[in-house]
Amino acid sequence: MALQRRKKSSPEIPTGSMADIVFLLLVFFLVTTTMNQDKGIGMQLPPEGESKKIQKKNICNIWVNVNGEILINLSDQLSITQLRADLERRMVANDKLIISLKADEDTPYETFIHVLDEVKLSGAERISLASPSE
Image 1 (cartoon, rainbow, N blue to C red):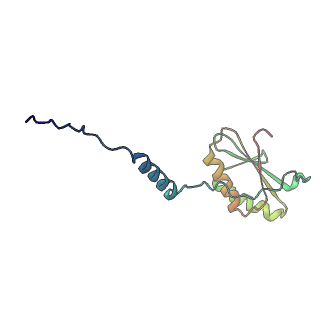
Image 2 (cartoon, rainbow, N blue to C red):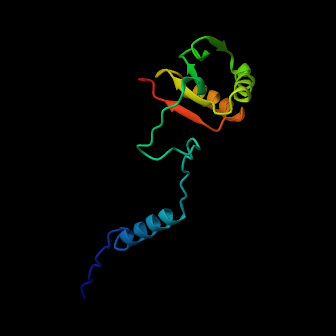
């Protein structure tokens, strides 16, 4: 009697259901992952196209340069610690005052936001953000 040789099975991992497993993992991670969304600067912008003529005495221009120096109406240079008190004084003198904030293109973002925070903390409700090219 001759012995029959057994066929050796090659060791392999069954990959037939691998695509199903990957798909289920992908769906699981898509459903359970949360994304943080940046809130940005909380300001309410006026409707598009709305413009009004404003008297110059009712506008307080604040410029912030690259070095973080703050100029008010191109004449008074203040530090960030003096800004809030100065704006409060100006708003008491003129209740229709609009703060126009303008920064150089190379001004650090943190500096601009710090100045904007001080303007808001001073109680200003009418704030205009001017573009650097104006």
